[in-house]
Length: 130
Image (cartoon, rainbow, N blue to C red; front, side):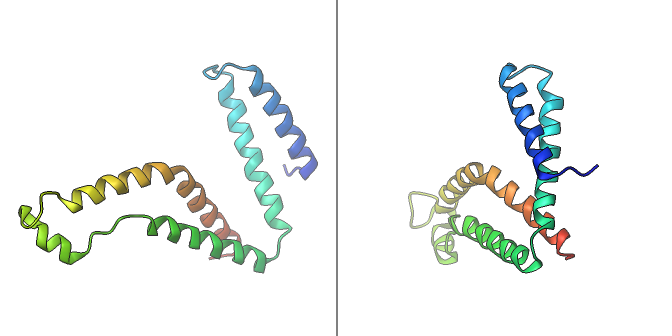
């Protein structure tokens, strides 16, 4: 069943009020949170249906750029530095191990954003028929 934006908004407000009354670990939260996510997805679909393909394409390109920006934050150790420091030669530190630790921290910090962006990209590609 498809709802109007007003119906979706009203149900989301009701769910938010109900969730606010529950303890964080209350088992009653599970179906309410699941319903909230269903409504959010429906709201995105309703919103996307009213947008032109050019607008959706611009959003898709922006999200792809955002993923590229997240990837650019990662530390890449140049091949020459890897070669010079392999086996502990010419260095007291291991730049590859240091880069790996930094990249793991970056991945942890951006995991939620990345997952949301990747999901939105997949949705937009589906809507645009790609």
